[in-house]
Each structure stands twice: as structure tokens, then as C-alpha cells.
Amino acid sequence: MDNAGFIVASYLITIGGISLFALLTLLRAKKSARLVLDRDKTWL
Amino acid sequence: MSQVSPRLAITITGTGTRFTRVLGVLAVVVMTWVVVSGLFLTPQDVVQGDAVRIMYIHVPSAWIAYIAFIVTAVASAFWILSKRHSMGFDRVAGASGEVGVLFVAITLVTGSLWGRITWGEFWQWDPRLTTTAFLFVTYIGYLAVRQLEGSIEQRARRSAVIALLAVLEIPLVHFSVVFWRSLHQKATVLDPNGDVKMDGLMLFTLFSGVIGFTLVFVWLVVHRQRTMLLGDLADQQGLDTAILARQNEGVSD
Picture 1 (cartoon, rainbow over the protein chains, first blue to last red):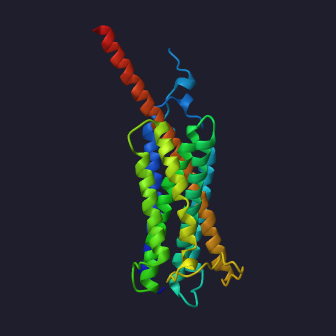
Picture 2: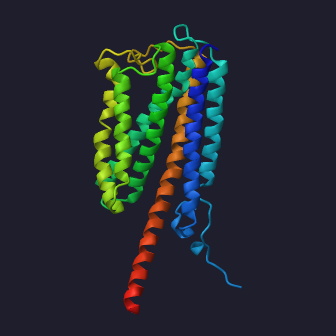
């Protein structure tokens, strides 16, 4: 594959960026969930 | 032995449900296919060579960023127009705006890497690139406004007005390659003549990317808006506790 470095980097940045955003969202959710009663978690 | 009512319990289950778990698994499966097909299975392009492989993530991320900002504007409009000013609309708008900024950032970075291969430069002050960078900065501003001091109603009102103005940039970005002379290629798949010159597997991988990014977008927005609800409730509880403590201080004096 020509220019493999740039191409693989673009995939790594994309998957890495999305994964990091998802991880931070889940961690923040878990932290906030400890402070709120279950009755207020309308999705449960 | 004391028992706590399930409704008064606090669990650390976070924001996940069966729906989000199924959605998450589907997103991972589709995105894995896009990576494998994009990197290894699809053929080289006649003109672009292997650089075309970046298109399978660059184009879907740009399209879903547009969708994210349109969702932000529509949810903001619903917040303004609804009689009850449901904060759910505001949270969906904010969550979609955040995910949109993530996807525009991915669009800009992957586009720069593609530009380095194709044009020999990471960046050109080309109409499409410049308007996309302007879109990115605008929505960073939108997110900054959401962090300003004030009540959640003030946050919703300020950010809704900005969202309705900012969404007007999307046609400018999309049609910049038509309005001005641009290095950026014109629409290939959304060609007004309907003449799509792409290999079957290339087209399938591109649309798989669109589906994969859509699943990721929905998963992220659902989790993020629920996290915002938890944050708002925790802030409100903290405020209530502080007011109660202040009132108790007044009584004891």
C-alpha cells in the first residue's frame, strides 16, 4: 500500500478519537450516576 | 433488616440500557467491517491510488457532522417553540453539537492527511477547507456558550439562538466547491446528475461507513444527553443541599 503511514494514521485517529470520547462519556456518566437517585434516571 | 425502595436506590449503572448495548455492538461490527474493507479489501482508485482509502472515513464523518448540527438546530427550534420548554430538547441539542464537533475534527484531520498525499500539503486555504474550519470554530463557540454561568434555562436559550444561526453555515460548506474555484473535488456520490463512477465494493464500503458513523452518532448522543441530565440533577441536588444548609445556619443563629 502506497502512503501507508498517512492512511493508517487517519484510521487510528478516527477510531481512537471516537473511542476516547465514548470512554470519557461513560466514565462521566458513571461518576454522575452515583449522585442521582434511580427514580430520576428515566431510562432505567 | 432495613430495606430501601428501588426508586430511592442509587446504582452506578450509568446511562446504558439494552437498546444502547445492542446499538453499541452493531456500531463496533459495522465499523470493524469498514476498517477491514477500507484498508485491505477495496481496490486502488485509478486517479487517487491508495489515498482513496481515507475517503471511507472522511466522507461519512463529514456527512454525519452535518446531520449532527442539523439535529442540534432542530432540537433547539423545538426547545424555543415548545410551550413547556422541555430541557430534553436542549440536552439533545448539546449532545449532538458535541458529537458533531468530534466528527468535524475527524473530517479536518483525515482531510489533511489525504491532502498531504494528493496535493503534497496538509492544508490549503481552499474554500471547502476554510469554510469547514470556520464551521468547526463556530461550534466550539457554541459549546463554550453552553458552559457559561447561569441557569439551565439561560443556557438553553443562549445556545438555541446560536445553534439556529450556526446551522446556516452548512449549505455554505457543502456548496463551497460549486460557488468558488476549489482544489477540493466536487460531489462524487451526491452528484446532481446521479452519475456515480465507483466500483461496487468501494461504494458499499462508503455506505457502510455512513451506517457505521450513524450508529456511533446515535450511541454517543443517547449516552451524552443522559449524562447531561445526570449532571443537571446532581448540580440541582448540590444547590438544594447548600440552600438547606444555609437555612439551618439561619435557624441555629
